[in-house]
Image 1 (cartoon, rainbow over the protein chains, first blue to last red):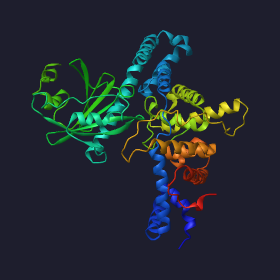
Image 2: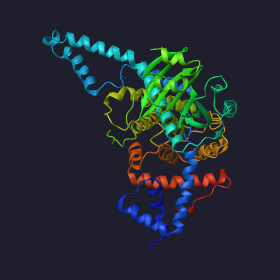
Image 3: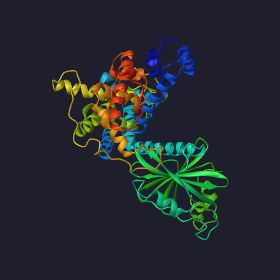
Image 4: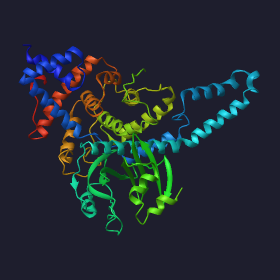
Length: 295
Length: 188
């Protein structure tokens, strides 16, 4: 048998997913029969796991995040999402008047149109940045919901009592929030049932993932500070003084809104889209008219 | 510079989601909060200016880390400190001054104490070990991507990473009582 000291490098390559093909097969076969290498690999994995638990190594200060976003918003060179072809066309058109005086008159229309395009692009930059941040929150909420569904994010507190779940989150998340009392306690038919909650990480801060059960389906509510989470885009429906944003992501309905410094993302597979999914819970409740009457 | 699209580093609007990673890399290089913040801001300013030259599907993450490292080395050269990374004393409370999330009782979450010890152990490493641990263990860059950021052969990445882990293991064993050490055969 090959001396196990020669496998130290291979163990590292295996740990870092850098082994492929025959080398990978050979090493797996060796692991089957070599207890020393298995122990070495497990110990290396424990070291990696220890480091991974402390991710990120440092959290960037909020002030730095603001400085970077301001730099992006104020930079005329930054026009995100504009197709490369469009940018090239704009660049070409803008360059033409400098190349030939004879072409100048013919290109005025295109030049004005291009300047307008660039100006509109710059005006849209803050909105695009906001949308990018909102999309990030939606993706995080959907990922958390998926993990919640497949059991990878088990609830850390299991209770149907809003006060119990609220108390559990107190001091664990960097904000204060209270789960509303259930519909039953409000005198209306209870359609959804609180099942519990757990902590999840969003942008380096703990946020609250709250689980509910509706019609044999699990739905989840991600609650994060509005400092890091933004609600924007999608189908916009103002209701009850709050602006709701409806989005569809991979067969999930995602409803986001911000209120009192917190941003919420409700993810479900309930039938219908947009406000229709809200009606599943709210049609028989006192606030049902908010969701049925507004356009 | 050419970057392969591995699907994970797809270019986005600003690269703002890499802010924590870039700030960590900057702190690992500079070991100074103010310098790290300035370095990260300068990185984004340069990246935004060059965004138009980044091909669709490019690996923005690796690109941003490369810019940060180049900016840092250019600053060092201007200070006539030579091409080697200069050791700058870590400021007081570099670990404790970082905002930490509240402690969670669940086993999945690392304790604040453990995370602080890990950070302190990493900051004890030589600069070339600190950055390679950061790029691999915290940023999940492949050997090829790390080689591009560090502008060195892949073989160098492999050997340096092995030595860095061995050294870190020893430092952590001192700091974290009960931490199960891997075999010491790779520690030199």
